[in-house]
Structure formats: C-alpha cells, structure tokens
Length: 113
Image 1: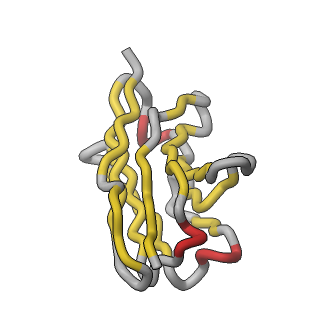
Image 2: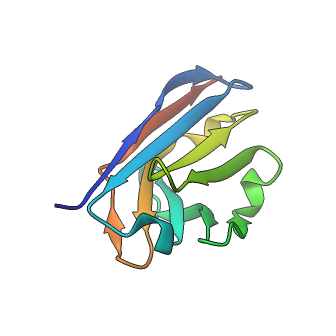
Image 3: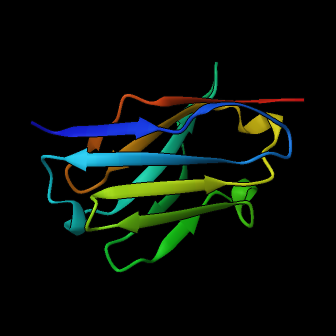
C-alpha cells in the first residue's frame, strides 16, 4: 500500500519558519524525484520545489532563497524547510512522488500578518 504522509504544517506569523515532512512507504523512494506542491484557495496547484534522486533541485521563483528541499533516502522522507514565510505562502502543501505519480493528502500552512 502506497502512502505519502505529510506533517509539519500549521499557523505561523509572517517571517516565521516551518519544516514540512513527507514520509513515504510502498514506493521505490530513492528512485523517485520528489516534489512539494501547493494550492491556495481559488488557485491552481503549483510546483514549489522538487529534488531528483541525484539531489538536483528546482524552486518556484517566489520561494528561492527562503525554502529548501531535501531528502533522506534511509528514512524515505522528503523535507521542505520554509523560512521568512509570507502571507502569500498560505496554501495546502502536497508531497508528490513524480515517477510513480502518487500524492499525499496535504498539510495546511497558514501565514498570518
């Protein structure tokens, strides 16, 4: 059974930090490019960051320098460290296993002014 379980979301003030985690099971984790997406109310889901199995990374322009994606292939977990959060970062954040096209259930991030 495939599971991608996100955690670490919550409510934080602008300028604060959160660290999201996504624990995967039932997939060949180390062979997958992993991504973090987000979807705000009334908006399309967008790619925030992705990391390949060779640790190459890509970021949405608006989060460059503030967010960092990383992975632990022993723990089958991908992380998103989010610093200097802004109200416009408010969204549901989803974990995605690109090769197998599996999604997590999402975790809410709310940034208050």
